[in-house]
Each structure stands twice: as C-alpha cells, then as structure tokens.
Length: 211
Image 1 (tube, rainbow, N blue to C red):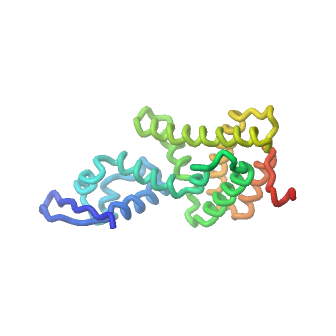
Image 2: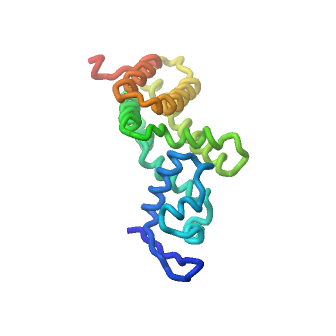
Image 3: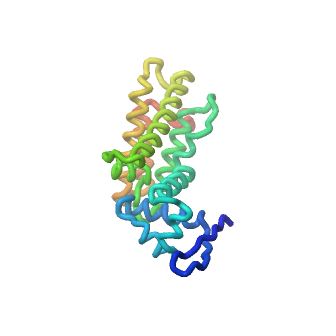
C-alpha cells in the first residue's frame, strides 16, 4: 500500500493516507466537475485531510491534478494505442479502440465522456503551464495516431495517396465529438455503430467482415 504520513498543522498529530487511493478519488472528482470547480479545501474535506496535508504530499492543486490525469490516461481505452508493433493491423486496432471507448462510455452512469477532452475544453484558452501540459498530451496522442495512419498506408490498408496528417486530425476530432455525444446517454450499440461508420468512411473495415 502506498501510504504516506503527513502532519496536521493544528495539532501536530500525524495522519496516514494512501496517496494512490486519494489520486483515484480526486481523478473522478476532476473528471466529473472539471478542474476549476474543484478546490483543495473540498478535496481535503471529502477525504478527511487538511489543506496542509495535501500540500505536504502534492505541493499544489496543479500537481495533484496532473497525477490524476496521468492515472486516467494510463487506464483509458486510448492506452491501447501505445507500445504497438510496426506490423500491427491498424484497422483492427482502431476497431478495438472504438469498441473499448463505446463500452466504457456506455457503462459510465454519470456520462462524463473523456476526461482529457473535458479538461482541454475547459483549460486550453488559458496561458497557464497546465494548459501547455494538456496541449502536450493531445499532441503526443496526435503524433501516435499519425504514425498509425502512416503504417496503414505502408501496409496497404489505405491508399498510398492518403493524407495521414489530415486523417489523424479527423480521427482526433471524431474522438472529441464522440466524447460529447456520449454524454447524451447514448447506448453502447449506437456508439459502436457510429464508430464503425466513421472508420468505414476512412477506408477501414473489420477483417472478419471481409473474409
């Protein structure tokens, strides 16, 4: 258990809490309420801590948020795109990704969509360092998708004249829109049909359907 002892500023009595559990709890709070609508006082109160305890472990609200965001990214459906081999079948990978996203969004009773896109929509217009870090997260994902489209062209899954940069931007734009659309309480099957139609429009088809 990742437990860290910190001291109450008023009594000097140490209290223990599991940082991992706290980050997970805070992740859900940021995911549902957004960054600006969550305060350190609220986080401390909800977890039986003091504001000083949080600062002792995380230094700032921004640092705590980034740990929560990294936890979300690590466990999100998009993590499927990381650490893929060069000989990966891109179409199958994208269909698997869309299936996972559809299942996750439909299973979320609070209909929160994607935490990354939620936070970007909220913070991207600011000049803060946090906005820059969020932009870097999105750029890293864009580059990964771009590389997968390049592999699809190389392996003749898509025509040689395919504009991989354009397709990558279209792909991410679709995911952003899907995040918003899923908040309307759309069912899993509806989301999967929408995703399949989009991938078909790009030229991808499930191999099981073409064999």
